[in-house]
Image (cartoon, rainbow, N blue to C red; front, side):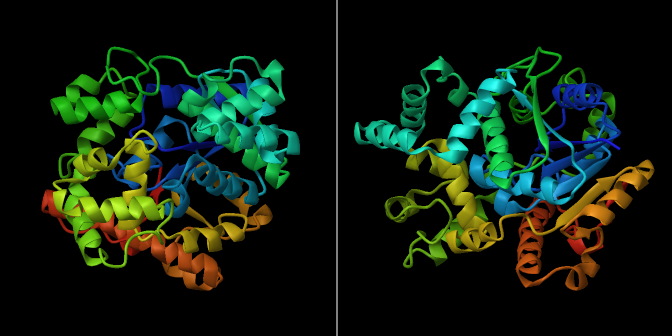
Length: 411
């Protein structure tokens, strides 16, 4: 049995995602595909536009056989944390043969060479990096220049580090190398619009373009050609009783959190430096909404995305201490199932026979399955989901979805 793994957000699921699922299965000859998917909050510091259950159902109907949730502590982290959490979970299942990711380059060898250098950090490379940082370069620029000095044959790598999917692909391979994993990585060249493209008009648009169209036009019919038919139907059905979620929906909750902790500051939260904490405190009473506050705080060294992620860590109580403790485990300590296909029984049997982490299909069973560090992570993750659910319910005037009573999606 061959098993393919994919790491994704599906925010929302579109034609490009379906292409990747189909192409990766064809290229690997995989019998099953497991998707490790972010839950309700995204790596760029934003809420998912659509709840995780609807997105997991889209994934199943788009070609996945099993969808697992990446815990928010990793899903909302930097590219390195995100990759560490997702890759370690797939690796610990003991059944995944391949890890497929999309990339702008479409060329695995150069990405692998970069990943090897960054994973192993040779002394000569570290000296080049230190020198470039001392010259006043930002970390991404310094890293690119140091890599080129250390290994001139890499050629023009600036484009690599300005392309989000390339960056994530390198981080996935770094994580595989550091874990000495047997999983084989491969990449599929991204086709259609680019990651940051906001315009529709492509048959394979970016997820950003879909979100931009939803918030700008409010007319779902404009998305019909941009998504698989079944994903589009799930989207329409979900929004009969819900609405697309956006960052500013969490403005009130964030402002309350910032005000109540103003005196203590925010440097205990992941990625929040003392300087940024002071900047937040000084600007606090200019707060109007989440996105505008990000714009107010951003600078040459701090992008809107970085600020948004830091504010999300504050909102969700993701501290540096928590991440240090969880990362010290060296892996995501459980795999929570969001969705599966009925005919994936052989895959589930293989996971149960080979996995070195528990597979959680019922939250009620978690107390018996998980040791204290893992159970602590899961319970905090559930609280984070309940914040999303409560905010969605308040916005739409519907009852709050209870994670303990929400069954997994089975098709």
